[in-house]
Length: 161
Length: 161
Picture (tube, each protein chain N blue to C red):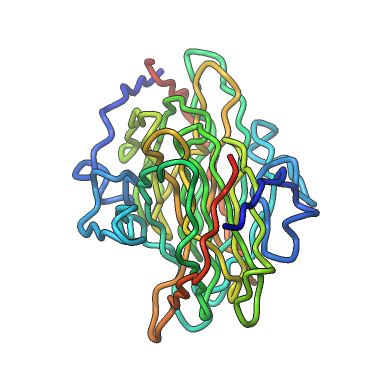
């Protein structure tokens, strides 16, 4: 059995996979609305190709611990962003672009104020709520074509959390 | 002085202006991720025309009470969605599409779990945080053209809240 430990989620560590969506990561901050609002601008590269951007809410049930990884997924035609709405931390599992390989798996612990955007073509696990059922705002792609591929893992892998 | 009172925010009441983004409003709910997640699908009509969808965070400072309305804005080239990230209610002020008219003003009290998406061309006030500085996830449009027009109100209008 292989065990993975979560790493802290930082923009630098997550850069090969996508963006961490949080105000602190903004490269551009604008003052708008006559001084009343600060705009932390353009925090995620939304990719939809010929499709359109969808806004949905995902309500996820926590898995039992130790959390098993059984299936990974990829969206070849668009990005997918998750922003936590329940004020709770969650786990993010990625394996990068290209052919899926177990050795590429990494696990990050996302804080309750941290969203993530998976780049188009980045292998990832579905977002792993912890302890309680949790809602996420999701921005992904609607359009023609098969935009979700899965691979089932043939070795036993759990997250040590 | 004209005084406006907030109405409860419901999808039905808000339909002329856009969508209320909350799970309860989903017309389609899918079970995904091998039974682990419920997807409340397609909650907002994101309109970006020839542009692209931007994801940003707005950090808004509350106005002093009674809250004065001095300026309204419209985005003629795209929609704009706000999802509260600070777990607090806020006020939404709209006046619909077409020429701005004071008589069309309506104020809604949005709950901490309710986002809103303003349709392209819908006059609205910037989101009005209440009591404390509050963050909102914002999905709007990047692209060529002037996508923000403002009108300054020439009579004194306040919100009775």
